[in-house]
Length: 314
Image (cartoon, rainbow, N blue to C red):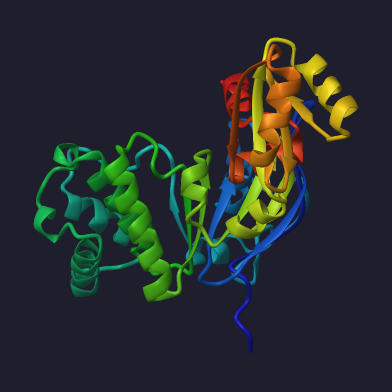
């Protein structure tokens, strides 16, 4: 019998009063896949995370976790998932080992089996030497690794992480992501994480980009950026709407205004720069050309800047 997907959601919808937080979202996560829910603040990531972690029931649509119906079998779902929330769940006065012991007891582990599992998990996250250290004395990255270890104490098939690198320095972020990749490769564990950081999503197997409750894009990082043919040319201008119109009239080149920028996509866009500067040097404050990124995918799909969306939501 084939292994069921770690996550299957179909037409999930959820509202808070008049605010539609999720609107017909559908996708699947394969067993052993490292999957990111990517989106700016307010995109719907947190609502979907709460649904997948059984904290809320979806108002519309269906969801299955490792073959179990989320509505009808929440207890079975909880046995299959490990959850690491954005806010810390560690007791700062307990040691690293005691935090794991407490988590293990919640899942029925006792005696020698519990002690062995705590030892195993501390070794796997590289903190065996910190077993007796109070959680409040650990670094941010070490505390995050203990959080992950807690989520894995009962050997789940799916690990859910909500913005797992919040508050970590760049080195601790890289270490955590390296460990998540190791979990997938070594144990076949499926990992679904939410993030608003583009560079983190770039390292995942596949990405679902959420925007205003809807699925804006779904695919591998390479496939998503490859859908933008050629290069992305971005111009800063005092009057971007006028510049866009003049470019389209002069060169029959489609362009897009995003904030104070004029953006266009075309093969070998760098070769187009001299013609633009010759025609509109007085209108262009700066001009850059680059290969497409996930931020460009977001702009391409939604027509809005990533940074502007974050600022608007905060």
